[in-house]
Length: 561
Image (tube, rainbow, N blue to C red; front, top):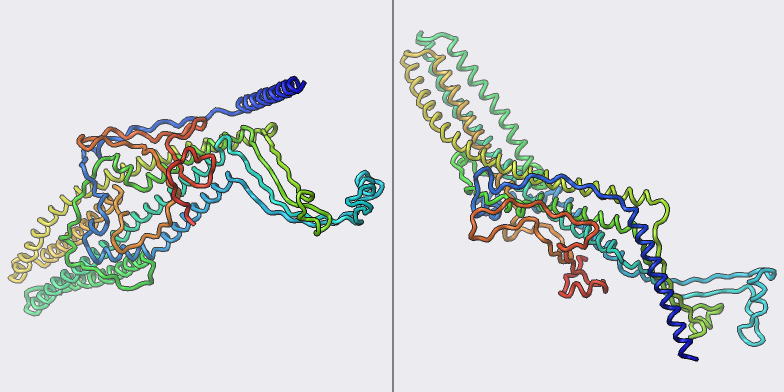
């Protein structure tokens, strides 16, 4: 008899499980039919193997800025800028905000435990079912419930959304990728800060040389003015020559004041970048025209993808956008919520902790699937897809911009360097012409206009020479930054970066060939996450998730506090 009863009970349980499975499968199939299709991005052109025919095995980007510039004064300014720049401090707070977002996302897929206490007083009507029942009940023999009836409760509640479709963990992974992206954004800001301080530093040296060139020109013109006055007194020249030389001297004296103002403004640009109030900026301008920076080694375009922090940031955002699509897709499917509670409840505090009479507990679960108002979920899903396409095109644009910057600046470095060599020959010829015209004017063999034009041409050539040298140095600095250089700190300089996030192993979108091969292949575009497939290229090692214990066997780094 017992065997038949057990058998019938087992069959009933199997029928219920089978019915539940069929019902769940039906719900999932219905939900899957409501998911709209995704749009795909247009592929970008493959990345070239070199920079318009230029490629080297090593990249200058691997040099730290102290080694690259080899100027203690400039290195000191850069170190002060990294420590005191206000914009860099603002970006550091953005990193902290992204760090806290990881903690929030991590906590969302773990159980929520709360402690609940309550006390209330109730007097039900005798003419209601509850009042009539309580009037007939006696908790103890010969003793009814007190009236009005108090109630005291001390309990612990647990709620837990089971992350069946990885919706919560994908949101955590996306937050972690964006955290890394903010760190890459900070590193890119550092490279721009290094380049901007260096550019202004060389511009300041160029202005000092312009001031020196004006002083030399004024000295020569003053000498010619004195000579013209003497010749006029001797009756060998007219007042017109004196006036023209005097006008030229006054013009250059006025130009000195303008250059002086530009020096003050550039000094204060540097002071602002350093986060300090206006003051004098140290520099050694005497060696400006002969200044030589490190020779540029461009490496491969694929190395640029790895070295440039803005490209890495765009890549992180692209991967995070793919995870956002998965999170939005998971909203189409049912969510499983578990709830439980245990505690003590009594009408008198004397009996509150009497076990097991005052013990109360409960366990339940909800399987909730969206049925109506699916347009809102579909809109979120399509919005996530549109943002993913934006991230794709932003990544493509960032790569294209970086490649173009490198090519333009390398070409500028080469062409301006050749131009400087030619201008040096021009300067030597003009210096000789000024010397000869002055001697001929002194012997009254040429007019004053010949001397004036020679001096004016010499001054203009010097100014153009200084400007060309400044632009060449700026091109070298910007090419160094475009290749990804300027991040590596030197000893003693603390870059304000917070503690690292949970360890993440990312599959790189670019794979270089072995070292023995000369040229790498064109770098492929980053692989986009398929919202319906598992994420193969991200492995998170975050403690505290019992469901990830089997996947994450290696010890994990703790989250930043």
